[in-house]
Picture 1: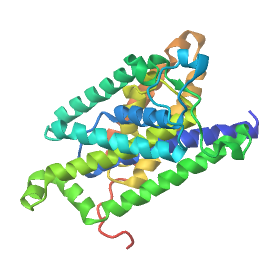
Picture 2 (picture 1 turned 45 degrees about the vertical axis):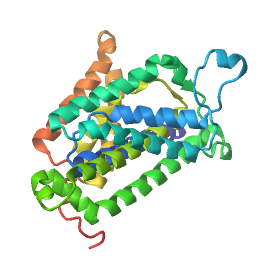
Picture 3 (picture 1 turned 180 degrees about the vertical axis):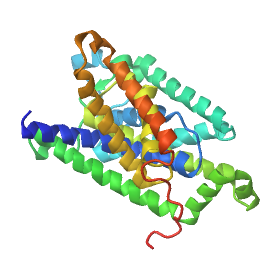
Length: 322
């Protein structure tokens, strides 16, 4: 492979890892700082991607309208798609939070994964909403006309990194404030936090909504990178469990760890593809399952030998700068 091809491959890897890092930052607010056991990340991933797609694409007309069915087509700019994805995900998280946040950890996990699958099936079965299982194609990309299409990924990598840094700084500012310390108190001992006069449900709701909004932005960034989405993309494996592995690997309760874990695990995940390509022909058909096995073994090793993750939790977060 030529050097230009290797660089292009690494850039695409960095883009996907950056998108997953944004999901990890959202999950870190919910689980790492508040202790909310959310296994419905794929639902917010799906909602964010479809919301941005429906806001930024034009409504189909002419012959094309016979094949693509979608209720919206506002043809608004990319930034409007990101904002819409965040707002819709936040609103849905708010509505979901009322019946679910009073549940215990295990029941919260069961309910959230059920809601995520329900969201995916709605987009799959309701053809009028977003073209059903065929999905949407031709999504616009920001700053697309500035460079040759062959080099566009460099521009999009800058966009991803810029948004990721902004989200990281906002979370750091919030976590190192009294609001963030209340979230950590709820995670450590909910009863003690309530005895201190804190409204537990209110703070849990804020954590769920804020994390979901960040996940919605991640979904929108994924949609505009791939330029095509369908319900088959938002499965629990790619939309939820691999994100949990990333956060656990990097360090739950540490935003730097969330980003590091996303890049490390995505690098391993893509690297296993080259490993499975070396398998004999008789095992080629089983290659995807072998990749799942490798990731599963990796998670077990992390939980046994490094349960705190690569960086571990930051125990002292009262000041932004020491």
